[in-house]
Length: 381
Image (cartoon, rainbow, N blue to C red):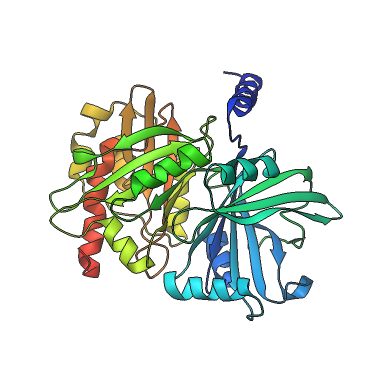
């Protein structure tokens, strides 16, 4: 398929969508020390700082660092001194949840129309549509609430050419970036309480016009000790994908139970990052200190029998502990980091797709067992 054809199909899908989106705009984190977080993601994840807002350019209450890798954008914000309700919220959020995601911002062609549709269909509005303007143009923003204390900021930046948003200045990289390790946000996973998954699936169906893409229930995601249920919602173009997990009753505490306990409620569990070369990505990130979950050698002994041939030889998959899954459309390669902060909450997934639009169903048991080994070390299984 040519790039022109893909663009045309995306435009047609957006026109048909009741709630058209262009893609993920940013994942925004509230953290205890944004300067140090930005340095970690620059060195360990190979991201490039592109913008900054802080006391030096008029933001007296918060400091924010904007990092990018291809189309993926992360924003790290911490409080410098508390002066407004926003500062109090950010401080309280970090105190209660630790470092975590406060905003899954979505780029839309019309923030006013998107906000109006969402609120009309039952969303809780947090910020009505408003404009921010500087010498680079105008951005239109609005925000709605989703699970926990997470929000979706709706961003229309079609009339803006600045590095991020008005109030931010362009900034040099913190360290000289090497080869790009990932190029896009593939999906963002939310954990919700027992019995709440279908409620939030309905929210995305009704409020944002998303459709159900995948469903994993029963024995799909279970081991001898723990289990979860998961459903995936996505926009019409499949550029924005939100798996939603809830714990399932089992013998011991699942990874979802552990997350909810240590995060203090529902929130974003992990962010999947799309890479074109997972081998180079894992090697570079491991060398920079990122810890990935371990997979037993036995997983690879019979891998070729059911996963078939991939572009990466089994010996290298075994060496780097990369997982494989195959479906009717193709295959994918994936690996998961350990939590990236002291609380066993937020972690990341690196994913390389070759046709498959799945989420690694064939690896759920191996992944769960790997997480259970880490839970047992923490005394939380």
